Every structure is written in structure tokens, then in C-alpha cells.
Image (cartoon, rainbow, N blue to C red; front, top):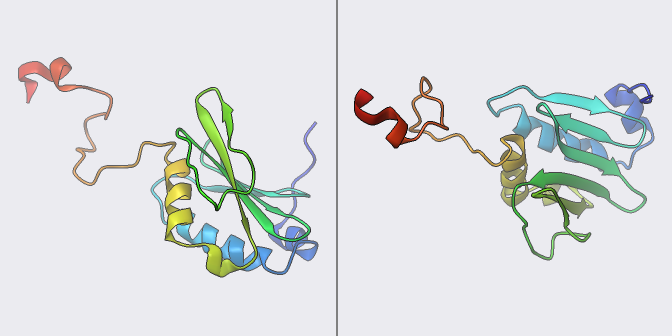
Length: 141
């Protein structure tokens, strides 16, 4: 059985001081995206969900770990752990010590995780599903 969730205040009462401003920066970005966002504080971490969990914020002893899953592997010095491959998805973790480290690059990765790799197109017709190809449409358009 899952442990009962906490309020944000209960979570931050025992978290590192920089966890709250890091959370606030990430949350402020994710709520601007098109889709449902669920914030689920647990005893050790905060889950960000849009259907499945898309990101995890975890207050550690010396930093705040932000983990997220993408459909592609990203390499770079920002990743603190080995990127884990699981069934074609890749789990990445970035350790942060200040809210200033939540930059455009990290927010772009979290946006990609939110949309599960299918970033919305500005010129997409909202009335046509994006998985229908031109060969299927034929002379309909």
C-alpha cells in the first residue's frame, strides 16, 4: 500500500532550504503547459504527474535531485547518475544546489518529459489527430 501523501508545507518542513524555490520555479513553468499537472508530495519526494510521473524532485543531504524521463538519452556533465534505459525510455537526474540552476535547458527537458516527447506543434490543426498521415487522408484535404 502506498504511504499517504503530504501537503507541500509538510514536505518542505524537512527538506533542504533550496528545495522550495527550486520546486516553485519548476512548478511555475509546468503549470503553463497545455495539459493536466498533478503535484504529489510524499515523505521523501515530490512527484509531478501528467498521467504518469514525468518528474521527481527529491531533497537529498547535499542537493536537490530532479529526475525526469525522456524518449531519448541525453549526455552531458549536468547528469549526476548514469542515465538508466528502461523499455525505450531514459531516466535522467540533475542535482541542484540553488534555484538559479533551474535554467532554460532544464525547463526544456521537463517540457519534453511533460509532453512525453511529443511537443505540440504551433501549426498543428487541433481538429486532426497528429498520428494520421497524408497517405491516409488522400484527397480529403
